[in-house]
Length: 84
Image (cartoon, rainbow, N blue to C red):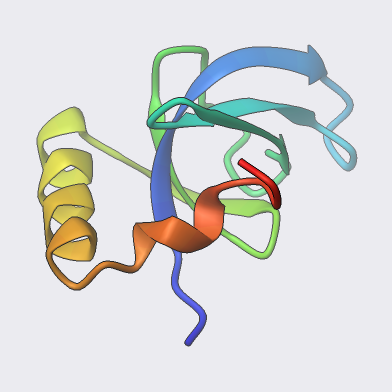
C-alpha cells in the first residue's frame, strides 16, 4: 500500500521553483524531498510526502494525528533504510 506520510522540513537547499528540494524529517529518518508543489513551505513546516514529493503543508497537530494512526496500523516500518 502506498501512503502519503507527514514529515517536518529541516532544510531547503534548492530554491528554483521547478527543482525546489530539501530534507524532511520523518521521526528521525531524513529523506531528500522535492518541494516544488509547496512553494511557500519553510523549515519547520510539516508536509505530506508521497513518492518523494511534498504534496501540501499541514499543521503540527494534524501531522501528529496521522503519525499516531500509521503507528497503530504499523505502516511506518517502511520508512527505515534497509539494514537499519
